[in-house]
Length: 202
Image (cartoon, rainbow, N blue to C red):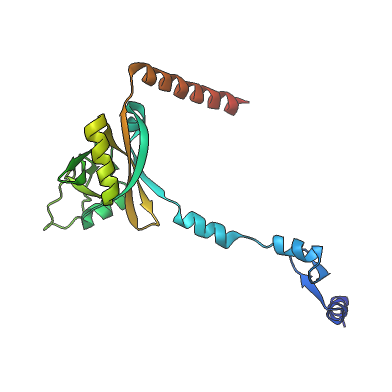
């Protein structure tokens, strides 16, 4: 009988357990048992969390430069089949888009979704058509009230995948920045770039 087999047999006689990660025998409910438990990998939990994390499709870089947002909302988007295929290919531009309220509903205007060359010939593809945003009634009422009474604008900030299957749009409720606010943003951006360059050169 090999030494390993003898050790395993002695361990079983003393009701010991073997931890392959730590390569040791230990008694149940001991400190070593706790160490063995804590050493188990958490890959499955982390993998599940990363799978549910939103994946960015497109960003409206002008939005954060032109507006200061007080609130943000997540909205669904009513899409056609060819639009979903184009979005999966990254054929989206939010830079000129805006949100308008009409008849108690919210609509995304001027969002450019370029049709793929393989799109069906019987479908009329309008790249900048008006698309309905999916929000609940409480959110729509709040948006309408603040836009009408306090002069807020509703601006699309980004588009992303939620759970890998649902297209979501982040919209912001904000007001236009003053000239000095924009200058401060430019200074902060330039400083961040310069700081990154200095850190990289060290």
